[in-house]
Image (cartoon, rainbow, N blue to C red; front, side, top):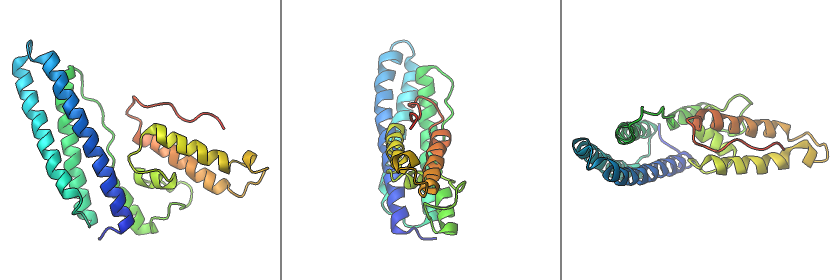
Amino acid sequence: MALNNHNRRKFVTGMTRRIAQLRGQTIKSLDFAMETMFLERSEAYLRVEEGLLEVDRMLVVVEEDVEAIDEVNAAQRLESRLEFIEDRFEEFESEIRQRPRRRRNKINMFNFFKAAAGSGGDPMAPAGDVRSAIQAYEILNVEFGASLSIVTRAFRERAKKLHPDSRKGDRSSEPELRKIIEAYQYLKTEYFSAGGEESGPRPF
């Protein structure tokens, strides 16, 4: 199945962001490994260094392939490759920090494409129908991959405008309000639940 232009832009933006973030983390981990491992754990350092350099080389290949993606199946395969690289990075990061591996929430964009194929990708589908991170980002009108702080700010702004108290008691926007609440909760619990993120929104 071919990707439409909208979903392709979302995919490319999201993948590019993840690649850039992982590349930055890889550089930081190499620096930290040099500072903490080189003298006392030199053998482990050399293994980690080679592994992280390989992670960076694999990222270059994935980055080159992203722009050429135009089909859902190809997008799924490329995302799986990036997830593998992210898992490899986490293995080396755990060894550097000498801690157990963290549970990493996977961003499954393919689920969104399947949902879009069945429902037309309507961001205002009935309540309870938010099935992917991309769909939730779209409902909140926020770029895919944006941080929780940006998501929270967008949620607050939309919620305040749609809340009946801000509309002189007019409840006609409640369906849309419920939808953005659902989208926000999806991102908060399914996408950002690995920890280390900011707290949720303040009361209205």
